[in-house]
Length: 358
Image (tube, rainbow, N blue to C red; front, side, top):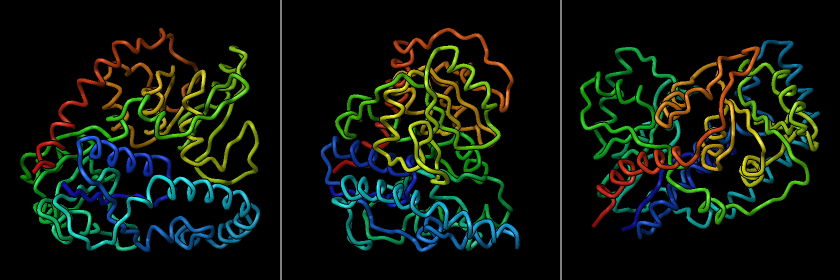
């Protein structure tokens, strides 16, 4: 079958690009011809420019001045980061891109927060809900919304849009509950597509990098999640370096601070780490896939992390934000975790096979 994927496939974000690759690879392994519907909305282009007018407008007068100064100071770092993402997109995304209105047997919408309300319009983008592009079937896979606090009017609009879909697979249990509350039936919760692929398969996709020193990886995507002194003390106790990966290029790139890493380096930093501390969902996912000992913490929006950790018996790895001490835990038994991951994959793969067949 010819299958199109409509997702955030050009956004310079680790999780967005890796989930797009994962969805494609899973469907290709089922024997399908798989392509990305090449839709890159203007609001995404604006959001990820060197100088974001979206971020600039949110600032007060002093904030605007600081933003301009910081933009000038960090231009070279942002350019290096952008280049690393462009190389990944050129290798893993662009060869599979097709024009927006090409016809398909099935279009898969997702994963990622494709159903979130857009800041510029204040509402949903209807293109991500099916019915507007030429295909015989339209299904959502691991669609997410982010903030699920909706007015009654927004709930009615959401219901109208979702009814365009032949199959509804969502990433979070909370979104499933929301849809069922507005009488949308046959909703299934499915895994983030990055979890559908084994570490050995990711090794075939992502080139391997080597690191000379033992290190703890600290990927603090969300401020206010970790007491950083706790992380550095833990690393010092174990005689490890600390490599800090940040999601935006705000400072000079050094061995200890990685600000311009692309998706290849992101995955390799997790793959080679002795231990991981992360407030990123996909940092958590790849820590599990690569059998890393880890702790995770989320100041906000912890639901999806709580869900997967609970399913895998790893809830003790979720720390209270800004906690002052680490719990006494034994090393993760990945033999048991692997069995649970395989079990969790089955309903998700079954869902895709149900709609993606001749």
